[in-house]
View 1: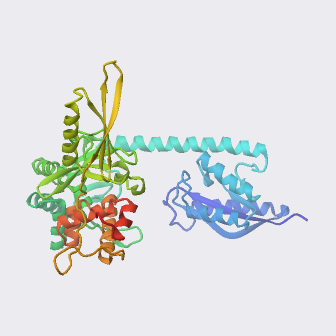
View 2: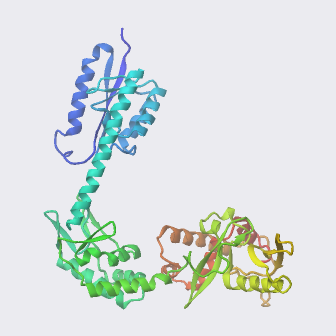
Length: 484
């Protein structure tokens, strides 16, 4: 008597088109596979009624819910044979197929394609599968290239290539048609931005006046709405679509739709955006003036890069450890950030002092630590050999936004305590939250955070420093160590 083999059917369709029909492509694949399993009843094949259907999922990705459930059931030893209509229904990627077959082999599961007879338990079956899958992958890549070429050609002709229409337009017969009510909102946004200080203020103004964004109905019939944010408003203000253009890979093409914004208004808005670009909070400036760029390091060996912090009408320069900039605080040195102008003044004062005795001494390296910095100079001795010397400079390099000590009733600093300061703990937690919002793009700048939290910008920028300290400094700070 043949051993009973538990069989399941996996089906897939790349698009959702036609899935709403009573009998669709997935049903056709399943019906053919069921008939094949019935023909193998004499071999002990029995269909398990669980369905594994992926409708609207590409075969080029493993991120498919039914496939994930299938692999989980295979690993749970609930399946003996996996049946598909064609091998490319399971996957179109050779690398993904190798991973899937490894899972099948580990659990002794066979894989059968009813239109391409083979068995993965034999070497010839594996060879046949790999050849077929190579062609399937080739076909997918050719299709992708064809789609990209079609999109490029269509956009060159000014055609709209689908998706949710932007505010100001509706879609009719696959063309963008001006929605006059929304178009007037777009014009108002452009004009209002020129009257307000920033994009953030524009967002506050639109929310305060109740001016809605784009509204549409999703495929499931649920109404959706676009909420205004600084990012979405900035994208809208930069969009050349409103000039009647279609942009593809940096090239402008005349569109088949009517413009909403005139060129003069659009140009004024772009000029203001460019003018304000330098005023957003903390910004890395790879090419900013920094006389020590390339030769300054922290005491953990990390290079320090110039950054700028906006403080009122001025920009203050700093050198920051690259580890701290990448939020790898545990790898940063004991002084992750230092005022650029003060450090440069001290470095070049020391260099001038050294050049009084060694005229050709040149600055080679600066290493910053908690108590000051080490300066390395290079010069050529009378014998023509290059000499490098280190010079230790102990000085106070104050961190921006140092934490103030509490005062007692007599106005003098209160005695230090090793008990954790609850207020300080809350400030540190808040600072880390702000830093994450800046990194993720949820907040555009420290000024954005100050507006949202109803705090002074100086307070936000002072407390943000707490998020940039190495863990050991934070622990010492909470423990009440002196010098903070």
